[in-house]
Image (spheres, rainbow, N blue to C red):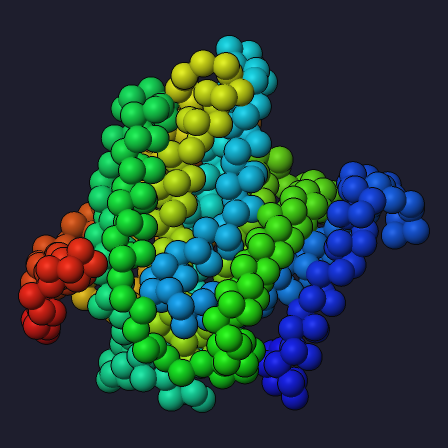
Length: 459
């Protein structure tokens, strides 16, 4: 999009311009959504449609700046680390939204308001994680295969058979897959402790810290040749280049962090006007808004035929959401409550965590052979969409408590389907799983300086 402009700095200026209306309207004057306001209303009264438009443009511009910063950084730091930073910044809005609900749960603990906030924190977190796989992984896979018809992307394997074309995943991502598999296995047991507590924080945050400790020790390798804005900035002297990267990360991260709030609230107001239930919007509409910067960044990378980096970013994002996001909820809750506590939730949210873990388990089973086919992407998308549509139908059709009971049955049924499919794939691809473990071990040894060579492929 922007990189077709003649000079790289013109592209950067265009992306910055997209963020300026948000800076002028929201950051300078503050914001407060008022459904009855108009674009002419002064300062803090902003119509939902204006919030969606201005916030959406800011997120779009910031997403490009963030992607350029990450690509430029690959000259000085390991690619996996640059992508991990990109992933954290891209999903920062999701952290902000969930932290708000967790804070309210702690501030109003042992009250109905606190209990509702705790359930909303879990609903928002599970919704975001399922969107990332159900729409993110599947949609980007399908987009990559579609784009390969015009870009001749070498990562796309074209095969005979019904929906058999597949995107090949970089085998160096085995480390992220292995850590994500460990976090997924642990997530199944989180509800058994009565909520998310400090032990969960130690385990899940500890996993992510260990992962970052490994990838940051990796070598800075000569990777893919960059063009456009990243190539231009990579020619800068090291000091100026690092300063540019830090600015792009800081500015885009701040815009995304601040911009998604009015954007999501605006969507919620518009959804309410259309009759969408508030709880449903918190679980699905708000996370969809907060995940948008990440999906824009990945689509940008795929559009540049950098599908490997795109999928690495998606998998890294899932890892930090499935570890840091969950793990920090108990910390925020405890700070707000004034003591070390457990973020408790109801039976419905227990089922939501289990189906989210089961979906992750199935998605990782798909990636054990380091590729995702059209069939597999369609399966992920169809399962996700059908479950959301089914729940929406239930809450629109049934009154409480029947709606909750039927929703629980749907969640348990889909959890079982995900687990059965995952177990079947892991059994069928046991050789690929052993290769995954071997690659992970090799990556860890390489990071600590004791690698004995990459394992051979078994397929």
